Length: 65
Image 1 (tube, helix red, strand yellow):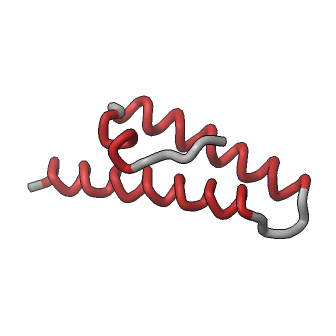
Image 2 (image 1 turned 60 degrees about the vertical axis):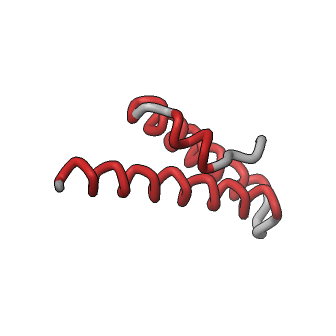
Image 3 (image 1 turned 180 degrees about the vertical axis):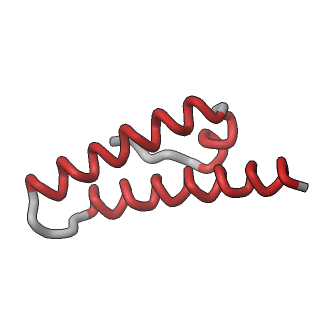
């Protein structure tokens, strides 16, 4: 799992962000099942998910204005 930067997410279109979000959620579930505790990988996946959701919210906010 590579680090996902804000600039990389901003370059993605809506479809790519949606696919990446689904992929990260699946990876988070698999990681949670494998290790019954929070580790660095889980934390980074959660951060990446929040970054994608933040960008999505900003894009939606701009569209509604």
